Image (cartoon, rainbow, N blue to C red; front, top):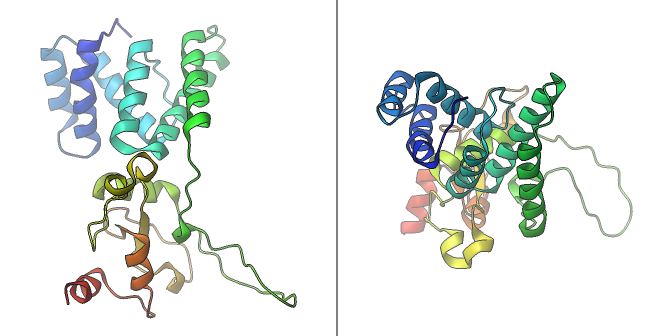
Length: 240
């Protein structure tokens, strides 16, 4: 990949986001990048690399140091810790792919990965989303054997839902980061608009239309009846 500098990256990153979220066709984004000094192939590679890093998938065209760090930093600041992990997984996949081809060691990329993993380990807070924890039962008194159905949540669908809707309660508009600061960043529950416990088989979740971010209080109130209240029903109750 030809030499890419910070000026190029500040142009291509927002274009890559627009392409990914279907706000701009790839050809238009590439044309704009070319007009700002990138060549066509580099622009396409960078846009595709953003997609892979966002989704946590291995990419095969290696970024330079400044690109890698810029993408990781901005994916984290724009989308939160879950997508930071995706970006690091994608970077590790790229390193392993490159080195498996016996093209040498990607020492710079490996150092970047190691440094971010150390920072992540030091700063990561334990985050519990009760909407996703359904397989532990705590009993008092006599022992019982209990059989339950566990409905597997897809973390990627959850992440895409939050990236699209933002970590803001769709009912009461509560924003944890505004109230709790850094420890509230990106914390939110995700409610399945279509109750997954009523499905007898797996189905493909639409992260945008099937899922919605809600705070724990509103989430609990949604499930005060079965089937749950709708989002609009609970909004109306809240207004009253």
